[in-house]
Image (cartoon, rainbow, N blue to C red; front, side):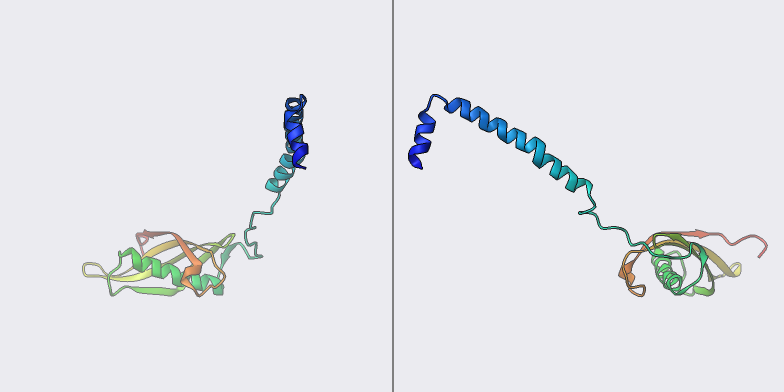
Length: 154
């Protein structure tokens, strides 16, 4: 075998064989390897599909939105805009399912203002469920919290 390679290298056709070998490698790469790789890249092999759930869109009130309210209240407390005597009004919350496990929660919190007495401050929270356990705070991601002034006349 060693003699064969030695003869091949010293042969007058060695340069021609080298060029043919490089051309063959190029042809195999262009016609077999690259199309196969492109087919694999275009497939869904490396993509994890988003969790599609059958859920009612629009205004809803269920167990999942109750957990979303709980996590939104934690986010509102972390915002630091409320006094210590603030009291959340849980029974009057509204929730909207936006699809793909996104929710908007709207509720209010009672705040005692020394000048005006007891006020209800409205807040809204956009939240997304990222995990599988509704009760676990790590399964939720709060996307934003917004406070609005109470409506005039109430």
